[in-house]
Amino acid sequence: MTIRDTFESVLAQTYPEIEYIVVDGNSTDSTISIIKEYKPKFNGRMRWVSEPDKGLYDAMNKGIKMATGDIVGIINSDDFYHRKDAI
Image: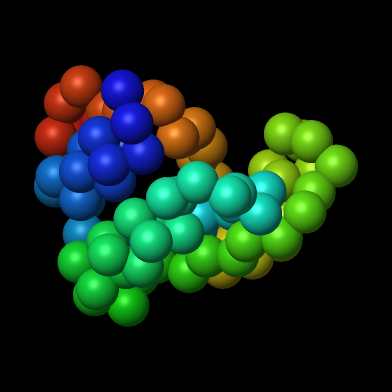
């Protein structure tokens, strides 16, 4: 699985009010270019940040602080939703 599979599974969700936040730990691979490629597909519902962090939980906390919704779900870059109605 790749980050593209993760993005595609989120985009395929039938629930329309998803605010998608991507927190990247300052990747040096192609992650940033993939994020930029997919951002327009989210029609303004994706926000992202790429900067050094202090590990997974620090990154999760950054994303939670960026969130504006009432419910937060976390999906990692190598995970995906099997169903279109998972959210």
